Amino acid sequence: FGGMGRLMFKKMMAEKNVSSLPELRQTAIDLGVKLLACDMSMDVMEIKKEDLIDEVTEVVGAATMIGEAKESQMQFFI
Image 1 (cartoon, rainbow, N blue to C red):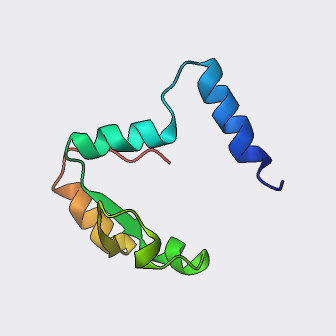
Image 2 (cartoon, rainbow, N blue to C red):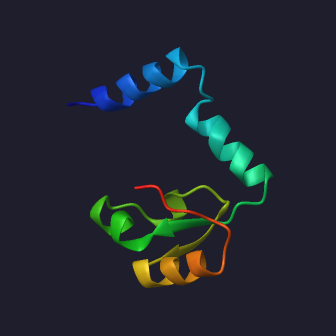
Image 3 (cartoon, helix red, strand yellow):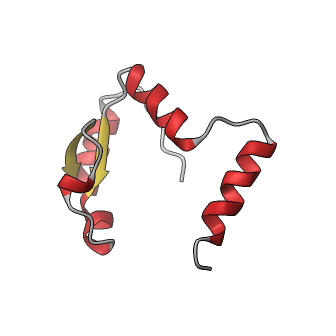
């Protein structure tokens, strides 16, 4: 859709008075959330570790992510 989904999502968030994604990301960083990047998604989208924000501590696969989740206070929402 040539970026339309992103624009529509941004508009819906503004209409519902939801913080922007950069604001939500910064709040998570400020709260000490550990940010992990998905190795497979990065491969598919041809993203390099250098392209990520500095706060991403690791690039991991699904097995590592599940292990991290088991030991944390997080929930997955897919």
